[in-house]
Image (cartoon, rainbow, N blue to C red; front, top):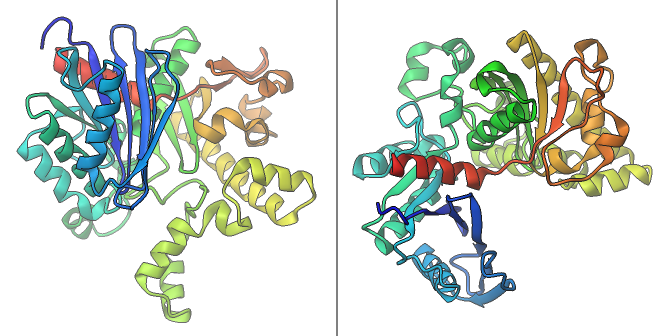
Length: 403
């Protein structure tokens, strides 16, 4: 890698989408961001914003039958801004990979062995790892000479002790089928826990933080001295908090009950718990802004959905306070966590004996910056810390290839 190679392209490949950001690691500047959606459909859509060039957002709608075509379209847009993928300034491509299992717990330069391991984990991440593999192989074909780095959602949670990671089922069966708690949103939890320590003026190793990543997908983590010791998502991203369309924690016997008494197949139950549950299942909306609007208009179903959401959230705050023993901060992040002041207020309401409180004025203020929203007297800092998973992936990628 040459000294002037300071750019990293971050790719997040979905089954029919491709999100990307190009960053210059000499200052962490975003040069371009974009999204390709509806890949494989007649009217695929690319939205590209050249931040460094100060240009306007550009959109194009055309058939993109596969990820090869999508990434080539992205390359064309970047070239138009003088940011082409053939530039000697491009140091590496960093890929978000959802599941790394027990073997892939660090950012890793991708080779055939790594690809095989990601593929081996498809049964425990059937919706995500295949799409991630597609993005990797597409990028390899486009730039076979360039280091490709995988950064895993599960990696940050690999520090959990065995007593937190294991389920209480037969050990041989669990090991044979890789059944354990892996956790997800790891790049977000890693970034936010470090940024929270910085907000407190301390080093990560000196701070215990509960991170609440609240978006359409939602997860909590207990981070002790910079290391994850527990997290709410498990074998899959279904476990834990109430989410936009996912149930979160549920009695596993519900599955057998629905199979035996409702005649539902495993595929139907899977769809129910992942796509028709959570806030959507409770009130027909998974947008917190719409739910709050309905509550203000007296909608009882929306109010109940909100209360269930908050009840689960408070349970995890209490549980992770017990896990950590000492909590220095609770950090809210992601779409809901960063923007929904009523969620933050309700989540800590009544927890004053645990040292938690929010200042109404500070909580109501909107900002893109990390900020403290608890009153000075509160024993535990409550903070809003915007997440930046793409920057985290870029940082980990660049650190690896430049070392």
